[in-house]
Amino acid sequence: MDYDLIVIGGGTAGMNAVKAAVKLGAKVAVVEEESFAGTCLRTG
Image (cartoon, rainbow, N blue to C red; front, side):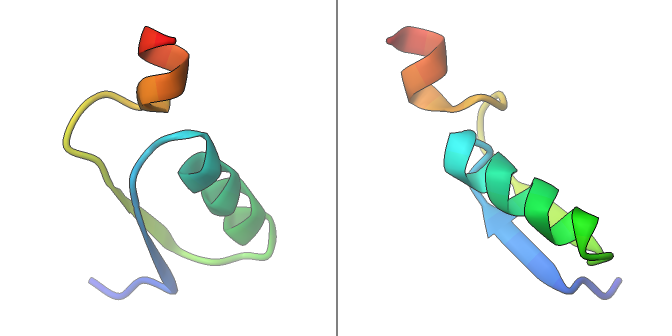
């Protein structure tokens, strides 16, 4: 598979990068070991 962007981490910054890239028409993959949303949003 070919991707224009691979984002490591599904936290707030990573997901903002994904959204921006998708709006520009990029094919994006996200690598996340745990659940999305990042540590700050899940645990405070």
